[in-house]
Amino acid sequence: MPSCYERPHTSWGSGRKPNIQCSFNVPDEELISFADKSWCKFHLPMELDGVPSPKMNWSPEVGTQFRNDVLSRVVTPGHARGNDFSGLVCPIDIDFFARGPRKQIDDADFFGSQFLGVTSFSKIKFGRQTNFSRVKCAAANFQECNFFSGADFNGASFDPEPFLAATRNLFSVFEGLPAAEEGCCDGARRPCCP
Image 1 (tube, one colour):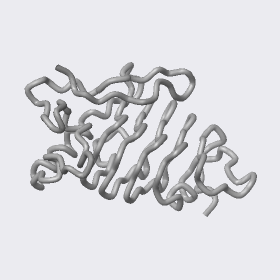
Image 2: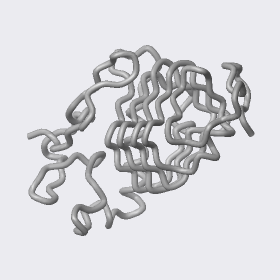
Image 3: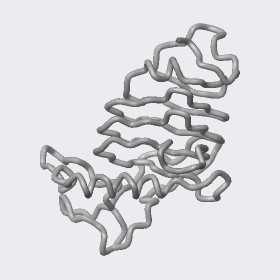
């Protein structure tokens, strides 16, 4: 029986159709029962209707293993699967730059993800389409990022300051965030709108 996660959104970017159900392919024996449903550890919410999930009581060791498992699922540029982290619920600090020697992430899809700790995407080069739509993040760092294609932050919920300091280009969508100074984001790879 697969994880009960179902993505409420069917397309993004330039017509790319994402997975509708859990993309993590967790074996059935690793699913977690909560609220009469089976969840993979990546989509398990912190709580539902005020009832805390088992994720609320994870030990530091389990949290560290979770972070390592998330980072191990980032695929190298050009991989056909892309990087689908939609719906991820990350209860701890995570630094995507720390994942290894390859610092580029292509087709990154974080739609609807929740990052409850400090989350760093600093110095990452996002190739092809990048989707941060409806992401909720307690504290995010996007310093020295490069978005080499479209980036969608529509409905994202976190402090806009890191975006105003991050490198971005004309193909990025930053709806719902404070408007940048007109003409500032000219596609150059430089900090923009300090």
